Length: 110
Image (cartoon, rainbow, N blue to C red; front, side):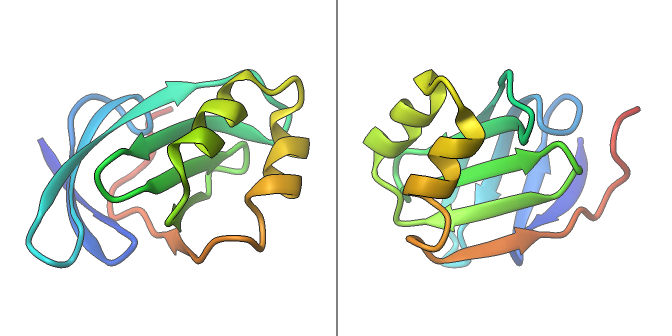
């Protein structure tokens, strides 16, 4: 297992980047799990959600990853089934929730 840095918090990933499970510490010493789901989109590559903290993680096609905090689970579920993931993101998530860019502390899988 490699160690990485997610939104300033300590994380461990299991499997390749943005696929499978990541266990993350939320900065308060609590450990949580996020499961990445690959999606069909021109804008987004994968999404993950932590039900305890209400954190939505988005990996963009550019490779950048962002963590949106305080996102209701309904928004995550609606994003997964939206016809246009990018349009849904712009209308219902972008500029509505606090977010941080996640800087990778490990190389991406190629």
